[in-house]
Length: 196
Image (cartoon, rainbow, N blue to C red; front, side):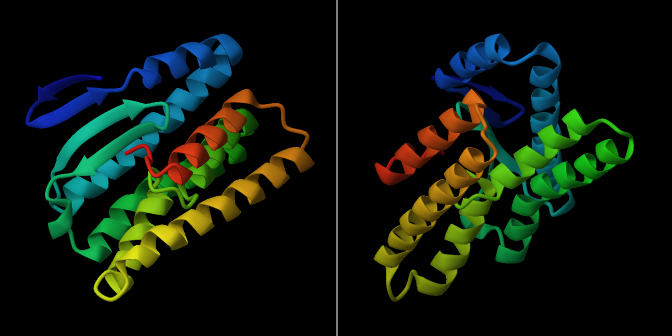
């Protein structure tokens, strides 16, 4: 992993990031690849903007096969309502962009934004949805039953993987990037080493 510090924020690039980008740039048509990159940049920019609006400083940005993840400085001090707004802002921005692109007739860009928004709401600890669910569960269960949080997250992960797989099979999807990402994130979640 390559790490540098820029303006007090740690930028980390995992070796899986360039490998996945290289694979996707070969596998995907150039337009689809650029649409995916633009959707990811919009998503993380929305998180960054919401952090700024809520006076939370970013601690780092990590690029990996799971995408880009912004981390909050002093995450334990971030109130749950602020954390919720920060985590949901990325998907909200992608949903809004998807609606705009769809209204303009650009179904491919709309699809890229919609896919990224929905994917980030899946209950994996390395996604926004999973991070939010974990925070909510810890808020409710950590004092009494801390072991249940991991058990519940694994069950949600399995349910999400089966549901998404069934949907992809029903749609006859041969999208290698979706299948690879689903397999990679499910395996990392179930082996107890989620991508952070």
